Length: 160
Length: 203
Image 1 (cartoon, each protein chain N blue to C red):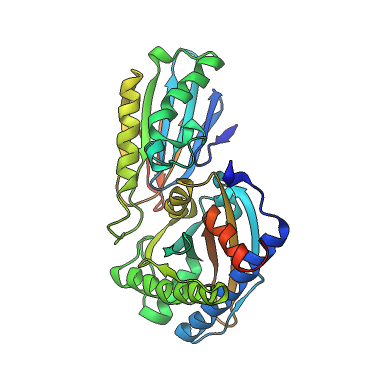
Image 2 (cartoon, rainbow over the protein chains, first blue to last red; image 1 turned 135 degrees about the vertical axis):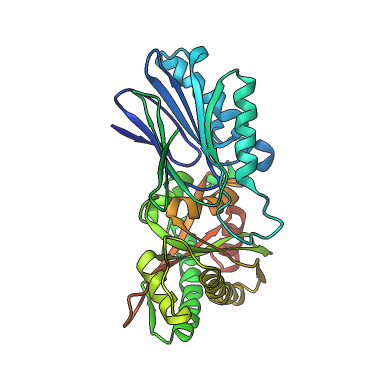
C-alpha cells in the first residue's frame, strides 16, 4: 500500500507498505527506517522552526524542521520500532524559483539545515541526502529495503 | 484558533465574486497578449487544509508552469497562474517561436512567463483593489516549470506561516482556438480574507 504524506504531515507504516511524498519543492522529506522491524516513517517539513510562524504555534510538529524528526520517532516507537538503531535519509529543500526577490530567503536550504540539526539532537544517524538544486522531487521509501527513491520532473530516478 | 474561524458562506461568496472580477480582467489582458480569445469558467472557492491544496489543483505530480506573485500593502497573500505542459508549449510557440525542451524553460521562456504573470496578475489585483478601495502591491513574479506540488509549495510555505488551512479561490480559463488552458489562483491570508469580506460589506 502506498501511504502519501502531505505537506506538513507525518505518517508511519510497516513493510510491505511504501511511504511517499509527491512533488517536494522547498519542503524537505525526512525518511526514518528501522531495519529490525521494517517500520519506517516519513515527515513532509514546510518550515525550519516555529519562529517562522509565530501566529501558528499550535501547528502540528511535523510542519517544522526542528520538531518533525522527534515527533516522527515518537510515532515509530508507538508502532513498535527500535528508533535507536534507525537511520535517516532526507530529500528536498530545492530553490524552485529563479530570480526570487531578496526578501524571500532560500527556505529550502534553511529547511534542510534545520532537519539535519534536529536529527543530530535526537541521535538519529543521517546516512544519505539529496537536497538543494532547483528541481522538485517525488520520494518513495521502500520499507522492505530502506531504499529511498528520488525522482525529478525530468524522469531521472536515483536511489539513496 | 483564529485561522479556523469559519468564514460563512456569504463571505466566501463575496470573495469568490472578487476573484471572478479579478480573473476577468486578467483574462482580457491575456487575450490581448496572445491575440486569442481567452474565456474564464466561473470562479470557485473552497477552504481546505494546506496539505490538500495540491489535490484541489489536479494532483501533486501533474506538470505545470507556475507564475507566482505575492501581494502586500493593506492585504497580504499569494496569487498564481498555472499552465499545464501543452499550454506552455502553445504559448511559447505564439510568443517565443519555440517549444519547451527537456522539461526545462529557456531564459526567454522563463522571462515570457514572468511577463505574462506580471501583466495578468497586476490586472487581477488592480481590479480587486478598485473593488474594495485598497492598494494591493504585487512583488515581481517568479516562474517555475515542475510538478504542481513543487511549484505550489513555496506559496503554501508562505501561507503556512500564518495558517494551517487555505482559502483557494480558483478560476479556470481556456482559449477559444488554440490549446491554451490554465488557472488563476488566489490564496489570501486569513486576516486579509476577513478584511476583504468586510470591505465587500459582508462581515
